[in-house]
Image (tube, rainbow, N blue to C red):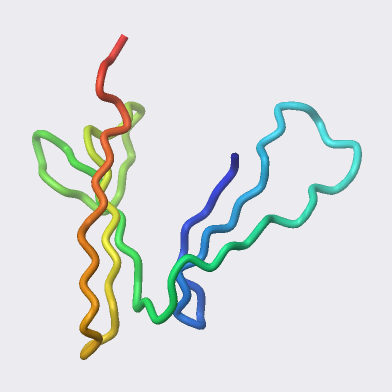
Length: 94
C-alpha cells in the first residue's frame, strides 16, 4: 500500500491510500481512496527516536528508527486529548 496520513485544509485527519503495484501500469493509476479519520484537528506531528539524540522530527538515516511517535494536536480550547501513538518498526533485527 502507498499511504499518506495528513491534516487537510478543512482540519480533517485524512488517510489517502492506494494499492502498491510492483508491475508497470498500462493505464493511469486509479485515484487514491480517501478516508476521513477525525475532524477538527490542528496538526499532526511525527517524531522518530534516536537512541543517541532523543526524539527528532526528520529521519535521514538508512536504517529504520527505533520508535515512531504520532501526535495529534487539537485547536486551543478543544477538550479532547489523544494519547501519543508509538510504534516500534523493527523489534528484532535479522
